[in-house]
Amino acid sequence: MTREEAIKWLKTFKGNTGMTELSQAFDVAIDALSAEPCEDAISRAEALKAINEMDIPEDMSVFEIKSHIGVEISILPPVQPQPKIGHWIILPPIFEEICKCSNCHSKFKQALQISNSPCPNCGCRMV
Ligand SMILES: [Zn+2]
Figure (cartoon, rainbow, N blue to C red):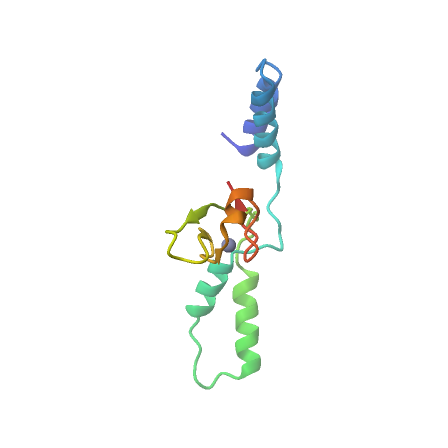
């Protein structure tokens, strides 16, 4: 099934759910599937991997290296940016900062964990 076919099916059955929450879930799924890949977004991990795997001769000039990196980055496929999602990890009370972000491992006071605020360090949305 293609993405377009899935969107069509979701739209067809969205009105037949009889439940507000289920109808909202259909809307979220339709929106997620309708999002087009961002042509200017690439994977940081894939870019670093491509650069690390480059074969750079010792006599290559800085200009040639920059050009080579540009080519490697320009041929990477576009990706759809996804929001970072994490959770607060509650630490034993012997630590002064008693919760840490599951994404970046920064430690904070428990008040952040209680409020479900995004991580102040990496912006990760907490669920
Ligand atoms: Zn974080």
